Amino acid sequence: MSYNPQQIVARGPRAVAEAAAEALDAEVELEGTTYSILEEDEDHDIWRIDAFPTAEEEDLQIQRVLTDFPELIVTAEQLADADWLAMALSGLPPVRAGRFFVYGIHDHGRAPVNAVNLRIEAGAAFGTGHHGTTVGCLIAYNDLLKKSKFGRVLDVGAGTGVLAIAAAKTGTPVAVGTDIDAISVRISNENAKLNQSTARFVHANGLNHRKVRSSGPYDLVFANILARPLVGLSMDIRGALKPQGLVILSGLLRTQERFVKAAYLSHGFKVVRRIHRDAWCTLVMQRV
Ligand SMILES: C[S@@+](CC[C@H](N)C(=O)[O-])C[C@H]1O[C@@H](n2cnc3c(N)ncnc32)[C@H](O)[C@@H]1O
Image (cartoon, rainbow, N blue to C red; front, side):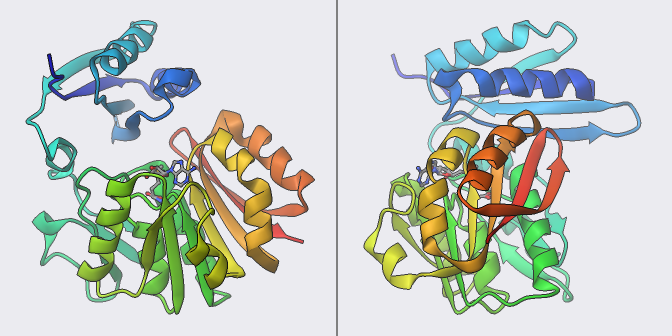
């Protein structure tokens, strides 16, 4: 029987929600699972995890991990088929991160005149700007832009394309993105057109594509994936960067910061900055 997609929501205090997020991340079988952790109610210390399983086994495994945290109140809602993720995200508010304002169709008309407006439709791709990792990348990039311009930017694991589109909309003439997921590549290219940006996306595992090689070397690489693939890609990212080039790494939990940092330090990078957001860490590192 086919699986009816559900949205699993778990609410509780920050420390418990963060511990549960770490437990989800530690499950190898859940490596590809889409979930987010956000502060819902600051006054009452209520944080929430939203998880979007796509198969029965994944659903059961998420629920099993969450039962180890009895302080969390867990609910599950049945979602309609097809564009279930877009539907789940359609009620989300727009996000402001530095100069960037990320919004969906439902907030068309609310885009401020003094912001770099990024209209991002999620469909089945990750990266509406609501996740701590995406926000971390946008904030890091926003601050780098105060001092530098980036002629060539690569976005590894583009999702909706939000980061490469942000680069193209802030003066980067060459912005290229890759994703291992063909649907994300299609959505990213659609979002690039929607935003009248020159960013272009190709289907690739990591940096392994002719267009990635021919468009480099890069001044800046974004890589918002997960800790283990980030470590695996560290040599390729170094090879794609110009000397003194920067990489913005995200997708790692705070608890994984040391592991990822060590790999990049050993390949000739230095730490420029780190940003903590929710349970997540964003690292800015420079090729030395
Ligand atoms: C956490 S999302 C980030 C999306 C977007 N860049 C953002 O910041 O919101 C990670 C994306 O990386 C892609 N991905 C995972 N492993 C990859 C790999 N080895 N090569 C390319 N893309 C990969 C996933 O398909 C997913 O779309």
